[in-house]
Structures are given as structure tokens and as C-alpha cells.
Length: 327
Image (cartoon, rainbow, N blue to C red; front, side, top):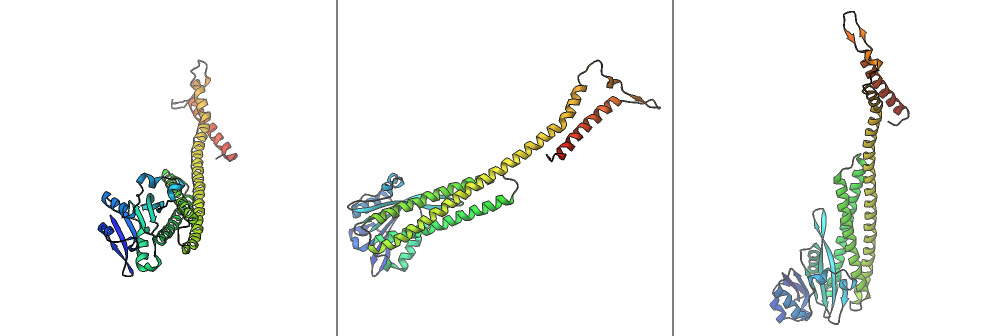
């Protein structure tokens, strides 16, 4: 799909007919926005602009030169945009080309709030977007605002997770999964903001942009640096939360091991006594201990003595543990 923004009758008009390229010149077109363009649309734009569009592989490269570069015919910039998908984000690369005549060409693969918001601003105050340079800077400004919203969203999720962990005595796998997901989102967000920083640095070094743009760039650089600091703080806080969660898990495991250890020690004397009386030696006086009651019943005193001795030793061990405050 292609959308052509025309400068006609002192306003911006949208059109999707590529045949306009045969009738209009560079001065009539402000912005050519392409989302999942067809081969025919790509060739029509390349023929009109007399430049080659970026391939998907070129757009996804991470080198600084691939993020921002200039040649004799145009300025080429590739930037990653975050697209929310439920509780996580997907990174979508977008390619921008600005011709020497000030026509902006954008190539993307998905719908984005950034482009919708920029289009609204363009329609409301078209006089502020006299060239594609101004429109490109406005796109970056809107994108940075949304980046700030996402940094704030991640920070709120981290704070909520921290509060939940502090109020719980037990940590399950779901909490660790949430921490891992937030760490992944924060890392992607940091990379996305660093990508914006490289693009802005390239623009600051350029001499092709109008002079009224550079003061806005200084403010945008400050905003980006502030977002990087906030993202770093969230990432560090997640590390602390992860360490706290793992510490609580270790405490739980230690308590379980402690219970089993204490149980084993408590029953150890009883096990020892049972082992002694289970040796089956011929001479074992306790086997002969018995009381004969007047009614003729025989009470096995040796058996009762062994049981009592087991209970007494186990109780004595438990009392000693409590006395030493090990329980």
C-alpha cells in the first residue's frame, strides 16, 4: 500500500495513485509512505525518485552507517520502531529516504501509532512541515514520545512486580518468568533508544537539514539520554528484584532442608535403639523381661522399655534443639 501526500491548494492531500508520478514534480510531493509495498509500487517510487530503496537486509543491519548515511542524491536512515503485542513488544525496522529536493520516503511493514499521530499533526498544521526534513524530525519526535511512554510502562510494571515480591513469602516460577520477560523488554527498549540516539547523532553532523531543525535536535538528544538513564535504572532494579527472588527461593529451600535434617536427627536415636535390639544376639536380657499379672496375663516389659527409650531419646533431642534455638 502506498500513500502520497501532495502539497496542493495550500493544504495536504492524500492520494494512492502512482500514476501521479508522471504528472507531478518534486515540489508537489511532501511524503511518500509505503506499507508492505508491491514490486510495482517500489519500482514506480524508485523511478520517480531516481534512487534505490533499501532491501530488508539493509534495513535490519545494526552498523552505524546503516542507521544513517548520506550520498550525493539522498539521506538514508533506518530505525527500529516498537510495536506493542500484549505484554511484550516487537521491533519493526523502518526505512527513510530524503531526497535533495526535500521529499520524504518511508518504507515499513506494519501499522504504527507514530505514523498515525504524525499524519494527524501534518493535517492540523501543515505549514510547519514545508519539507520532508521537517516531517522526518517530527516522526522522530513522536517516536521518542512513545518511547518515553513505554519506558514509563516498563517502570510501572517493575515497581508492581517489586511490590508483589515484597508482600509474598513464597516465590513461584511465574514470578521468575515475569522478571525474565521484563528484562527482555527492557533490553529491547534500550537497544531501540540507542538506535534513535545514533540516528540523531548522524543528523547533528549533517549540513543538509534546515537551520531551524538543529535546536529541536538538541532537545531530542537530551530526551533520549534521559530515557537511556531511566531504562538503565529499570534494568538495574530488575537485577535487584531477581536477586531478591532467588534469595527468597534459597531461603525456602533451606527451610525445607532444615526440616528434613531435624527430622532425621530426631529419629536418629530411635533408629539406633531399634538397630541395637534388632541384632538378634543370643544373650539379650530385655527379651526375658516380663510381668505376670494375677489374672495370668504377661506384660512384655522389655518391649515397652524399648519403646519408651526411643520416645525419651527423641524427646530429649527435640528439647535440646529448642533449648539451643535451632528450631
